[in-house]
Image (cartoon, rainbow, N blue to C red; front, side, top):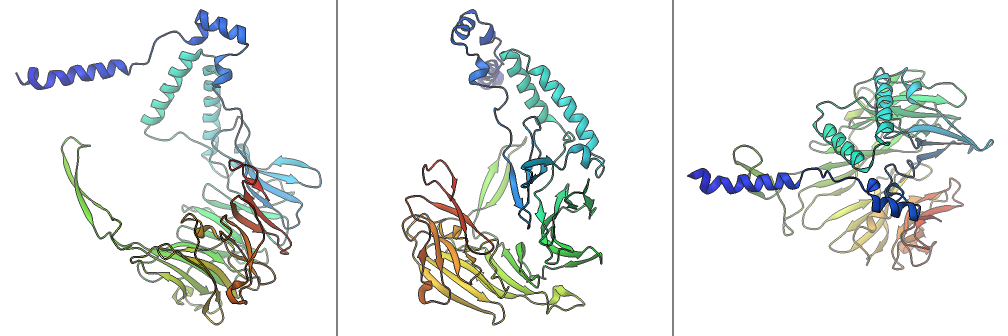
Length: 461
């Protein structure tokens, strides 16, 4: 009686849904006589409109020039090499690019790579056979592969590729990471030299100024090592209790460290709900804020002087708190470039943005005086994330270049931190938005990207 009254309609509905979701068995369009005749008349096939493989491969990324301006490294893979990238080297004198890393080369450093090579051969052979299938069989093969990937308990062995290169300032030598370990490679040598072999993932931050060591990140800390000494030093300070590390920037002279931190606090509200994902209902709670709640989290910027640190334990030296947002009613954020330092490493520049008051400021922090000075203020009228893209940085002459929307569009402006109000001077103009910029080492040139001719096209200016 219960089955007939309550369960039978559900069973029928389930059967109908299942029947509707069965893979269609109609013949593929490519073998339908009418479609085949139209294809022959037009000279087009289904694959011409909806190709099984993309026309283009992966875009090159991570471009970096050597200090001599002769070599360019970048990460790229060919059309047939999926899901990873290797390092390539372009020589400006010859106009040719050569491939540096490959699965076969890096197999000498990692025992899992040979398995990945064999798996790739198997995948390539299977794909080659699948490409011979008609439209319907190809679709069914794709669905089967998708289900196999979804249900697989352990991932298949894959070659993960390498990171972008970081060049040494003292010669034609660069460093990169592969599977969480660090390597260095001098141009002209047949293979890289391995520097670390750890379980923690490591990534290159930059070279030491003399080119005889590396600064790198491992977990939530920054380290420095000298090749000749083999001594590893942790640079990140011991932050106040509850403050988590969020990034760092080393000064050009290698003697100061700028550290970003944050402190997450529990939400002021909790909501209760019932989950029906399991066999039985389960009551749960979830943190949730509404627009009237105070912002609970906090953000910090600290300056750490590596020279004055206690040699016995450098982490015990307390850093200078350059900037802090203690949460509260009004949302604030900081706009800081990845290169915030002055050439002499004595000052940093950053912007702050109060969203509710629409107040944007640019300020410099004097390291020796431990003093923050605001030199520019404005009330941006544009979209609320624009001020965070100001990307302020020092020019070699001590002036500042930043992206501001004073003209109604975000453009590059030059400012003088020693002048009243910053004496802003617009460098780029037009009815288009400029995006984060780069400055030549001598300060003679400036590069930005933007859609000057078409909003959908990003051009280099």
